Image (cartoon, rainbow, N blue to C red; front, side, top):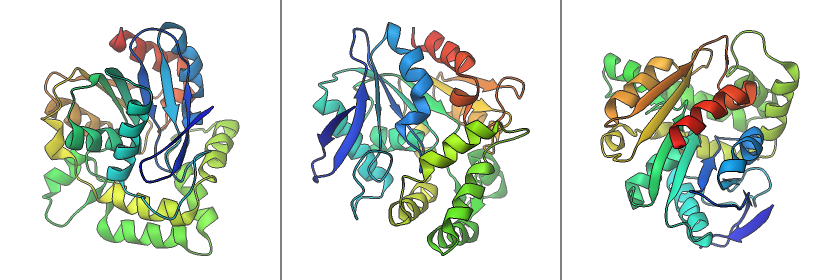
Length: 276
């Protein structure tokens, strides 16, 4: 485990496998940690350099009282790739991690990204009132604004721990491996409510649809039939990004928001084929 200090003084914990080849920078989702990619850090590293990081407020990174916005996380990632001297790299983002890459592209462009992998993230999580019903379906919106506010209030409230674990459980479809569920629930406990709640609100309030058609690097979009994220939203993203490829894991391969944990062999094979 390594550390760097961001330009606003926050300590971030990251891993770097070293080695040759184009680096792969992997970003985790809201409330989770770089441990989500434990099977990828080992499984993909023999053929490439793999870099993972805990966002501020998550995992082993510091948990300051500021900076819980997707745009700030994108600036932190810029600091990471600058710190490592990565002139060109492959980028993978899962869940909110995909949103952080969209923010990165929006602010800093695609000049340093060779290939992009987006895993199971809607283009807009909250259905704002000015979206048409068709736009809400296409974007993959999970909440309306009232539902988002209600969830945030519940997470910040006295029963926040229970609400948080119920939220995690909702991301699994079918029979859930209890050890896998316990692992994911354990990781999310590292993010305090003062960090997680404002970040969740900011993350869910974003609408990235206007960024998609400006992505001009080879892109792979990954969905999962058993996820709480509708695979149709991933098809929409793949259709909007010029030349993007789509792969949806069927339920008999993975049935949750966490295909890289449920079936790392299948997940790694698809990612490796695209990046090679």
